[in-house]
Image 1 (spheres, rainbow, N blue to C red):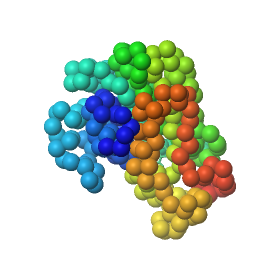
Image 2: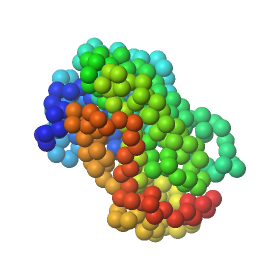
Image 3: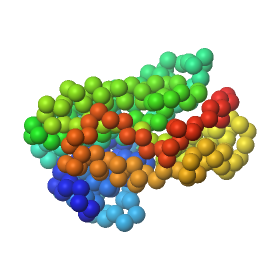
Image 4: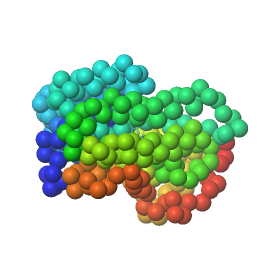
Length: 274
Ligand SMILES: NC(=O)c1ccc[n+]([C@@H]2O[C@H](COP(=O)([O-])OP(=O)(O)OC[C@H]3O[C@@H](n4cnc5c(N)ncnc54)[C@H](O)[C@@H]3O)[C@@H](O)[C@H]2O)c1
């Protein structure tokens, strides 16, 4: 435990079975929280250094198979968490998908799919968990995974970037609406994080687009990044711990960029090839 004051808090993490969500749920467990993991797939893997027991005893951790694109599934998850723990204190929305699509090749089925998960999925969980998060009247936390792409144009990622801009704006609206209850709402805007979505998915895609080996595509992506490395999921989880902590009561409606300065230096072009 590292003094964030989160012991025994009830945290709900969507998209908890992979990447950033898996790191976030482990970080909450390490801080002494009880964690409800919601994901469309199987429960999250035990992280290095984590205790297998943490994720199997129903006291510390709960897994609820949940599809954030379904009203019914999210309401069932809300009920399961209430039955398990009474009321959630913290909601972290990590469930997300990505799609690469130039504007002039728009296929609205793709837009609908991306917005249903990234934006409406976030709205669904906020709507569902708000009665629990506001119940203390003094403390509650919502942290939404937006993206660096919310704030600048990343060519050919139109549905994803637009969905994340919407998540960032939703964050600001919810922050104002929930402030009377002591609930803070913030967004994280990461750059490239070493997860299945980025490290394998996007690199493979860019390699294919440019007709170059994946290793070369990776090197070219890393050349854009000021520290020439991907962000570790645990680094995102540390920011989540701070925003979730009582220490951050005054921090609301923000977008925290975690990108090593990438968005200050970004040079367009690499993603443009189709
Ligand atoms: N990896 C990056 O570089 C990066 C950068 C910026 C923002 N983000 C955002 O962070 C979040 C997590 O990304 P990640 O890299 O860990 O991705 P990931 O693919 O590793 O994990 C995403 C998780 O969301 C779950 N999910 C997908 N659709 C779902 C649904 N309908 N219902 C419930 N769960 C669903 C998946 O099963 C998976 O476990 C996403 O919102 C992503 O857009 C990622």
